[in-house]
Length: 73
Image (cartoon, rainbow, N blue to C red; front, side, top):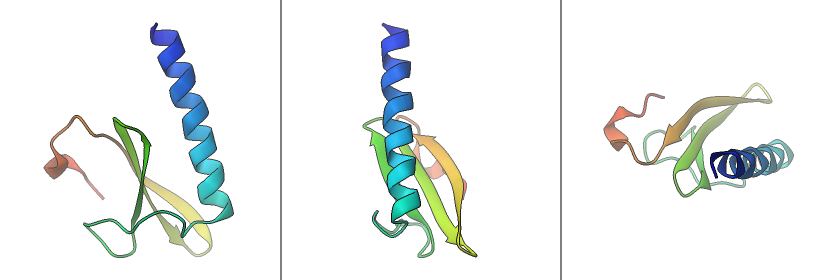
């Protein structure tokens, strides 16, 4: 069961990163900072990223089961 979940996460993560690389502005702006965007990968995981000198920086891979106050960007 765990392997299936990890495989699903890996596939969804790869799909999401491909979308970000093709169109970095596709996902919504974070409520924390204007230059940071967020995308929910699966219902329990969110990626926070920003565009910096035409490069995409992954700032955080956050578990949504945690307290949102713990997000460090």
